[in-house]
Image (tube, each protein chain N blue to C red):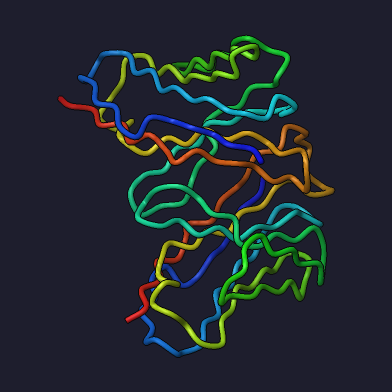
Length: 117
Length: 111
């Protein structure tokens, strides 16, 4: 089964500072990877997804960017944070080549609570 | 595009059954999912149902799917205080493994 490691758990950053959130996946190869943001403990907004190394698709225009330098590593970045970037960021993966599942569904990391001050 | 809707809040007494409802728009979804989120944590996949099924039961959880009405429900039998959480309905988009999520139903279980 897959395990997602996501860090840090909480982060307080000043406006205008850079951001780097990292997510790594264990237990599968070539997974699809996703970054979601959850505002105010409610719905999930898909920010980026990746189907392979170096392949990034952006769902919404924003101040953030994503990169996938290795098969099981997904990074969310910003050069200059805005107040509106505050939220709960979740990394997720779906099955990869070594997973026996066919029904999809996400495995989520434990999330990063980002507060921009 | 796809849309998933849920009621925002549900309150039940411990020991009662809880029923959380969801409607979706994409009739081509292959799988529909229920996730649970406890405070400050990520989401956990609770159960799923294949679109050609009407019902799926897994211990205290029963999922009902009415494909004609595009209605999905999650029934939790003998609800416990540990079931208090936000429950998300989601449908697969059939594209790059993406899913569309509802806004979540906050279930409060009172002793």
